[in-house]
Amino acid sequence: MADIEPIVTAIESTDSKKEQLQKAVEELDVHRDSIQSCTIQWKDLEHHFSCIHEALKKRVDELVEKEKSFEAKALETREMLEKRDEAVAVKEQASLARVQEQKDAALAVIIEARSKQMEVSVDASAKTAGVAENKVNDSSITDIEPIVPTSDKEEKSPAKSGAPKAGVASEVKPRPQLKQLCEKMDAKGLLKFISENRKFLAALRDEVPAALQFATDPARLVLNALEGFYPTNEPSNQGNKKETGLPAQRRTCILLLESLVPSLADPETSSDHPVVASDIKEQAKGIADNWKPKLADLDVDAANGNSLEAQAFLQLLATFGIASEYDEEELCKLVLAVSRRRQTPELCLSLGLAAKMPGKLVLMPKDFRDKLKSTKHNGNCIL
Image 1 (spheres, rainbow, N blue to C red):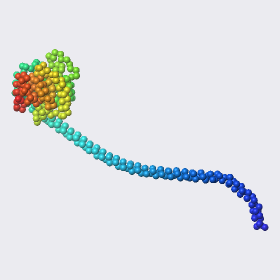
Image 2 (image 1 turned 90 degrees about the vertical axis):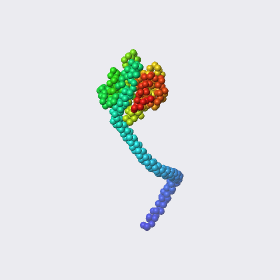
Image 3 (image 1 turned 135 degrees about the horizontal axis):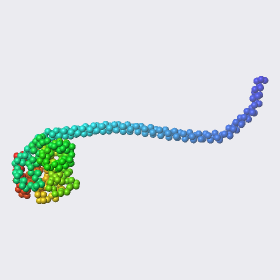
């Protein structure tokens, strides 16, 4: 009996369990549509996620390939830049070495030229002056004096020739103010001082060449002073019985050009072949080119053989050795305008016009012809 009771109890509860199962089945049947719908949405999501995964993987692969390509190009560019930097550094060093070499060579040339000029300036001045004195002694000076105008009497003294006396640079001691103006390279001050002290012209003709030796660049000092030859506002020439105003200033410019000759003298070939730096020669030629048009309308007859402008132009060419830049026939015409000046025969020689002058002697005063024929250079007659 005891063993049968559980079975009886289970049989009796069968109906209740059957009812519970029925309810569970009914509830499951109610959710059947939702379960089917959920299954369909998951498949769609799974397909979508798979597509995204494939796309991302493909994109990552592409980025990896691009990164590798970029790194390869960056490495190639870096190597090329390094090689270029090395080439630039080599060129820079070569350029610096070349510039330094040129600088050293130029400095050596300047030092050598300056040393040579300082060593021979005294000897050259004495040599040039000695030749000038011989010329004066051999010339018929007294024949020219009667036809020289009063305003040019200062040109007649033998001590007033273009070249200084022998030993001027070494024996003559220039006055302190004159020396100081040259040391300071004060062109305007030098021009004014000489113009205001022309009553001491005889002494100044000896002192100016010596004073120019104290200038750092005598040639440039004289060229700067030539600005006063054609001033912007030319003062009126009133009376002009005394050497004042523009004529005095122009005579001073001529004196400076004549006094510069010993400083530029070449000890090997004499003062007729000056040693002039290329930049100085260019500056002198620029001044000559500026003066030349102003001489185009020069009246030779009216000048009466005493044209200051023509004399200054010719002396500028002779002092700086640039006569070859100009037409000889035109220069010969200018010689006619200064034929009464005692420096003219020597100017003809310095300008290399001696061979051109014989055909024009008939147009010149007799005294000038005699002077030109008697003038000697290095022991030989010009004509």
